[in-house]
Image (cartoon, rainbow, N blue to C red; front, side, top):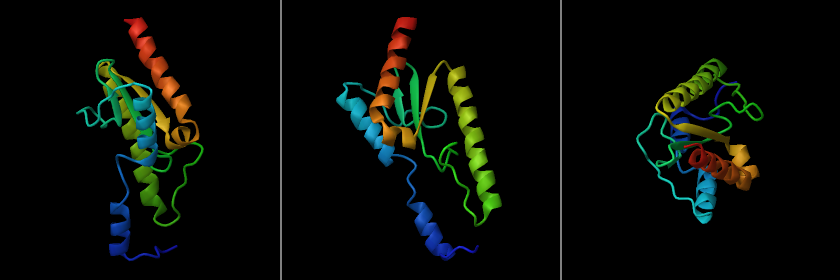
Length: 139
């Protein structure tokens, strides 16, 4: 099926896809802040984590279901499917490489799917709190 948008319209549309400060990311950040947890943004680490607890060496990612191939919600566009399959599979491989790099540097990596944050942000906050507490007790 051919794209219904012109290349210029598609480019404009795709340029508006956010890579940071997405709705689920902002929701999680607000809840963490309200819970008294202080974090950093824009820390220069592999993969550019969405939320970073520097002192605890915890990197948190909020992965979009489409872009990172959520096993529950991932779909491949029918148009230009070969391109999209390759692109999305490479995203997943990059995520694994980033996890390995960060863990090799002594960081703990926590990833949430956007549907997990949107569905139960409190469970995500509890998971982060539990991970931070485990690290304090583990040292």
